[in-house]
Image: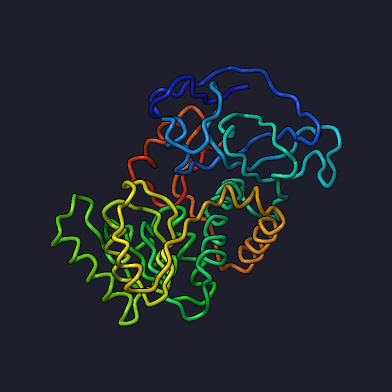
Length: 332
């Protein structure tokens, strides 16, 4: 079978298309015929050895898959050969067939395409955990979302609206702003891609404050980091929650006196660790996502698909912050 693998530390250009043996599922495992694998920001970090987890090489990137069960390992219950499933596996998805622990899989409801099934778990899973468990979202809250046109960002727009919040979407250009509006954003703020000086940072903070209203943002959902975090923190409401989700623009240095002045919290959102520590709660949230999907309140936006041999192009596009919605690798 074919697999995209990383053999050395580096960028997407170092990935190779290899021919490898088909694996066999062990006890408690399932062999999945992978039909779609979504690309996520951790994929860009892992191949450069910049992520929290560093798998032993060679391995395949790709932590979010959908496909059909081809074989069951010993002791697997609740699944059958032929079932359509999706799974979050950390890595190992960019290959034609993958062995997956059965306890990491979910049956996909009828009528959901593989591309959308592969795009649901990590983005919407991160966001429902972030908004509910870390942000304590409630109806009437104002939510400021940085990077609102990417996969995670659009999931935040949709879920915040589904939970009854008012959404301010922050994006890098007007085209992305229109995507966020179509997803349900009430207001859009365009931030600059170039480096900001103190005056520009203050100007962005004022734009955030104006869009959020006089009380400020009850929740800041920060997927971007870098120079954009402090202006967003300055627009937070009294006792607001600033959720740290990712930092493709760099790790921000935050003036902690602002947390005192606003009596606000800065909260980390580490979805991967949450799924391992609280598996029962995690599975309940996935079921809630299925319900929201069937009700039409969320709908993963797959903006582009790539064949397996072009997986590196998809990773590069995401790494360069050029992606809108989800980029998905599909298998023939």
